[in-house]
Image (cartoon, rainbow, N blue to C red):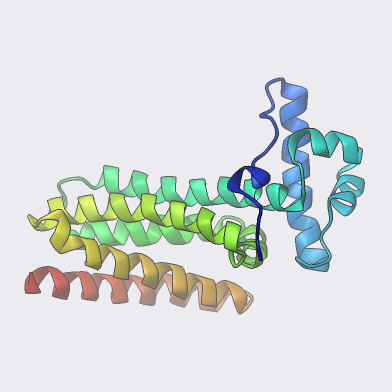
Length: 211
């Protein structure tokens, strides 16, 4: 039975000085490296600290435990993904649904493939209960932005476009994850971009017409 609260997994402090920021960034990058090298179960704060070249005490100044470290990295990665979708929606305000969907798909795939090692490594952390909560928050941000943009593009209500946005986001997330977990070979990435775009545009066009 889990008794830990959400605060258990929060960073202890936020770096302010440049030196501290560099240290935290090094710890975050090393967390990804260790996660890829040994997996979630064998990842420890000691392993991360040793590989990052810092003391365990220094690491604990920012992250009280392994979970806090993992979810901080997951939060940063997730925020970049949400921002990419939000920016695409903002840039396409007033455009046709097809143009909007094209921009959002491109933004989402680019964000996930910018660092395939990070995206792949963090799927394990995202499957944990606390990690799943981080993913839900990210998804809600992207979902809200896409719902609003679709409603404006289709001259429809937010309620009408809410489910359409959910299906589009789920399609992007699921298809991209499948390709990443298959190793993201170049040919498969090209097909992901092409076929995901067709899938999402066709679905959006059909759904908008039926509302």
